[in-house]
Length: 248
Image 1 (spheres, rainbow, N blue to C red):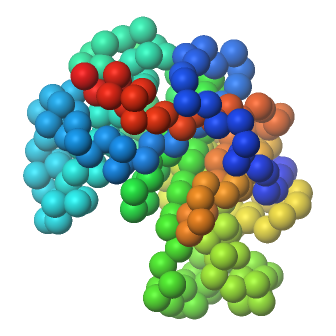
Image 2: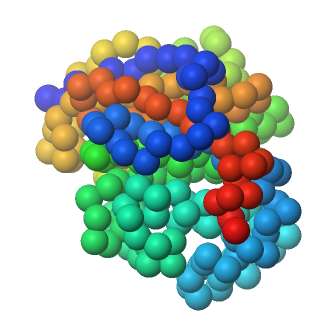
């Protein structure tokens, strides 16, 4: 039996604009606002591998292509600061369940992006993060019976759109952190506030999990998942000067 605790936390205060690159058992969460970096697009592309540049060309829309390039470059640059590698030496791989990792280091990471925001989480243990910008025209009612339990669906119908996005990001973050890699388990992943017992210990690498939801900015919902016990969440929000130093 696995125990998962879901809760809402505040990270709106204490976001640092200067980096600290030692985890010391904490989780570091980086908020990257892409409009602050778009003027460095050409320089950012120079950090990407050949495969990543090919992936960038697959995007049909210019904005999506630019977001991929900037997000991937910032991931490389930030990860390099923690690992001691050069950004060009960071080699990304995936497990059989498509969970990303970097060869040659024990530092774990996860990335999520939506609209103008990229979130990058780094930790000594598995971590998953998800961010979504609320789409006021999206009809989520059709996926409620597929991805949510009857209780969860009822909760979302009662509380409305903000509840849907909070619950969705919790499930996504837990799915990514656990490395299950199977969206067919979405309905079994808990997402309501409180402590939940689930019969998924044979699937999870770790028995117990924490899922923290937090408000990034108006219009965005986000959650981060990691193995229990609770860890300190240290947040960084680089300003344009720091981004200029990163992408140079």
